[in-house]
Image 1 (cartoon, protein in one colour):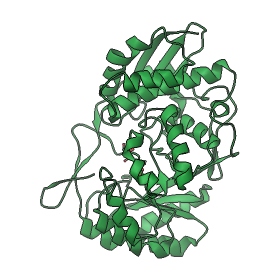
Image 2 (tube, helix red, strand yellow):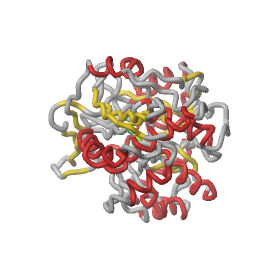
Image 3 (cartoon, protein in one colour):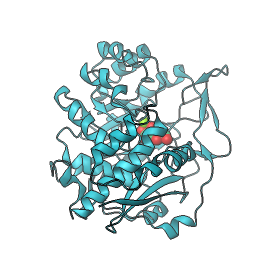
Image 4 (spheres, helix red, strand yellow):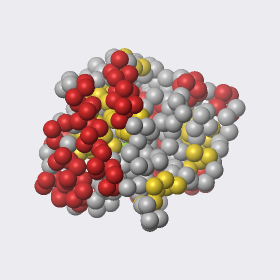
Length: 402
Ligand code: KDG
Ligand code: MG
């Protein structure tokens, strides 16, 4: 079998999503997600100008060699643009291979290790009462694991908080939105929120929280320690993780489980974190981590260190990435949990998919390949619209992490 062509689609069915379709001479096609929130067109150019010309004529079954060709062969390695582009090709090739063999993809990744995949949802509110109520609404929908975010008293905007009754989407059209952040206000408030949620809903629910990279190691250590009575499932992205060694300090002071990695794109971003057991969950996922080929290796590397997976699953990762992640989650032994932020109904229409949600779990389905299609005609009615993630500053104007 030979690859004959590949096309990149950029559409905005409620949000921008970049999709790759790879064609073969056997009539089998594969899909890959290449979305990088706020930097979509850079990945499009990388694919169109640099990767697709080298892809034509290759054997789609050679997933390992093709991945190495684009990773090693570029000389310039890593980075989210490069790795999202390589990921799109890698996933599309795995999709082709599984379809050609008439098997659901998880069968090629190790077979079934579980029947269902535990997911966590996002509950949020502009204040404590609203956030607590929203947790209740999600429990009623069947979720057994809930991430809780809330507006912070004294701050106008906060990460993860929906406004005007709409679903939360951080990217907005126009230039980046400017927000103000105060570590002091956040640290004063957060233990009250999570203690209250635990008091109201009891011990049976798994609770998670995303710090979104905004503390220093010693601040994160203090927060982790204060949250210990809440028995969190995890505290996510406590610090910017470029300095992996910073986690040693956090770990020294708290037994609150730690998750990190949604912005990572290489195993080298988390080698120290994993091999020194500085984290409990690794969140790097298929699209930003370079595809199924490296993510499978990462999961296998993490297994003997008791680090489990908790793949990123926000709405800026398309249903193709969700399906790919679910296949990996189904096959590996050290699966932990999967993030589930439901896509808008229109996105689900553009990407008809086999996977489904029931009573707090996702089910991958048995269709050959990834089990996702792409409705090109429908997608073409929603052209790309430039959008950016917000930026954050401290109250005195200093640039900070959003
Ligand atoms: O594009 C940025 C989002 O993917 C990110 O803010 C979502 O932190 C996130 C999460 O945990 O889902
Ligand atoms: Mg996060």
